[in-house]
Image (cartoon, rainbow, N blue to C red; front, side):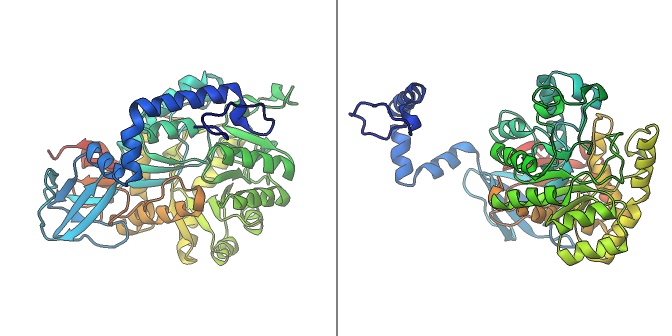
Length: 476
């Protein structure tokens, strides 16, 4: 199979072709044996176009949903009198009335409840969400990944079926979830947060300075962050994340609250460094998101071609107007005083500034018509992660429930499409329409009247489906 010569010809030494290596030859022979024993009929059927249908019928029965009120992710009101058919991973039909389901289909009567798309969190840290920072920096990474897998399942059971991971070594967990080895939302991974020396994401302790040996800190070695200095460094680190499967690139352009020696007002990447990241991402057909709180850091990122600003809680009127003029996205979070424990010294002052800026951030975003995504950015706490739905409910302070729900479904899905060819999930997300992914929630109540229902997912979510698979079904 993995040969550049015919099967009956010997493999001769060849300097430019990997298939002549002994280990590749062994793999080829093993694959060929497997195909001859088990794969002949499957290969023949696939060549005739019959395998996909067989695989689909073997995977699961079609599921027909009846007797529901629909929020489709894009409208502003519930619709009645519809039937929804799911086959495999996708929505196959949304029909008026009560047509007969396919033979053998499972029928789920929603009892007049609300059916809506699965939720999307545009700023989540899958590996960092539920593990305390001290544990993250000192524990065996095997433990960290196991803890993250457990939290990923809990995240799905809160109704969040898709996440944009905004920094962390999540590639293996994403693969495990996609392959059904673990349970959790689908993940758009950024890979390591790329930061300048001293920037947000530089978690080195003072005794680690200057960096010894290869210069890689513990956080860098585990893939949590990548510390750069100069455009050449930046290109290499960005390309390393893309090589591992990043769907977009995360930079930190200002200081942050969780890195106490990186002041919030600091500019932590140069214009040339940010441009190098943008160019490298665009070479792969994708985009850069930048952690930036202050006007100076936001404007620097926009001038370098960044397409998505994260946070922005200290922006002013002129900065908001510039974001809108550039057609860039704002991915921000409804932070409040009780969303994180109080800290000491400069970190606490930074935290208070961010919280105080939340109202103005949303007001400016609405006034200037900025494309705005919903995220939560919950970090380092199993006590805080259950508040994910509560933060969505808090959006009713600035938006109608329908507007907030659109932001957490179809609007966030539009943001995810910026990954272009690096998008790991090609079907539509965040909407209920034919051929979109079958990511569905059935809510016991009307979230367009009471969005706070989603703050209590264990009580209010009667059904959770991701990719056509049922993970909770209390409807029989």
